Image (cartoon, rainbow, N blue to C red):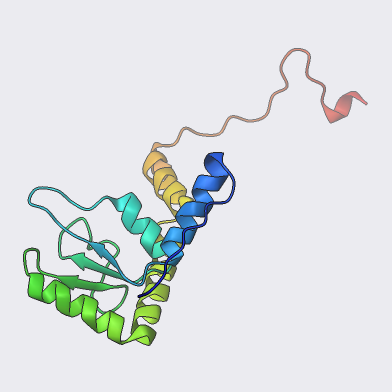
Length: 151
């Protein structure tokens, strides 16, 4: 019989974060299932991918932005339990492939879904095209401001 241990160090948010990281590190393969009318939460998917955990995900529109079957994880048709079982078995039997898919998933998330990338997207959407931007006003010191010519 295999023995398992859970170690939780510290309390509060830091302890919870450490516990979550330890739990993610112990996962051999993560599953992102699909239920009728519900997508798997992006946050959880991003956590798996960022931790380089290989993912088997249901082929749904909400998963396609991160999981490309055979590149950043494996997919199965929702409701096809035999395909899900086969994908899980293939990764459990081939740890090198599982590790490679996990690493590719991590690279994808860091390149495309990091906070820095999210900020770039928001700035792009919030910045009007150059033709719509107001012209820059020339610098004119206001009352109480000192210019270099005052010295």
